[in-house]
Amino acid sequence: MNEEKIRQYGDELFDAWRERRTLQPLLEREPDITLDDAYRIQLRYIERRVQAGEKIVGKKIGVTSKPVQDFLGVFQPDFGQLTSGMVYQEGDVIDLGSLIQPKAEAELAFVLKHDLRGPGVTAMDVIRATDYVVPCFEIVDSRITDWKIRIQDTVADNASCGVYVLGKTKGDPRKLDITLAGMVLEKNGELHSTGVGAAVQGSPANAVAWLANTLGELGIPFKAGEVILSGSQSPLVPVVDGDELVCTVGGLGSCRVKFAGRSAV
Image 1 (cartoon, rainbow, N blue to C red):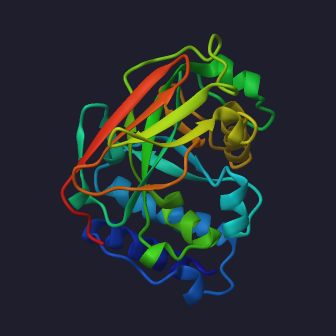
Image 2 (image 1 turned 90 degrees about the vertical axis):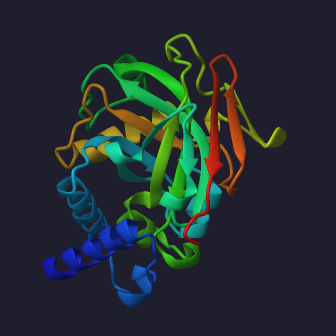
């Protein structure tokens, strides 16, 4: 795909994000779009957000579970960029009016104390480079109409990233078994789902190592202080006005988030 089209689709996604509206799936418009094209579109979209005043503060890993990979027809995770405009802290109320068609997922976030550069990064390297982990929610949000996405659509759309919420309880991954630690997700006080770290590429640390190596081949390091969202341990949860979600990780603690207002779709 030529550079003109890359910029066109990246700009369209930026405009859709800014105006809270959706676009026809890119793959329907460009049947020959490749995964490399999609990542180049993502970079253009993020470039526009940075030009608008945001900063890149981390990365997110998506498509870590086999059912999602089977649905999208891909057999490796994908990734997107986290920006300063996406960050919420536990106790904040998320305004659904700022989102289009949001769904929540619970996962583990890694906050780095050292730079990490691939290739050759192992899960143990990830653990050593991590300052702490926290339970978190990612609120995914697609700029593609009706979530009619294939892998090229979600990658171009920054891995369908919306906003994210970090819990307050910090854990040391050298002392916490993040692979076997269970996760319980409650919605409005009732059990919604359960999960475990091993569902994410065998361990959340494996997913983070994969991304460090993937980006390292592109000359992009993880930097100290960055937040890395390691991939969902729960099914997607649609959210509406008044909903409250709590995810609890065994041996670590909880993250709680509330929602108010009405999304664009």
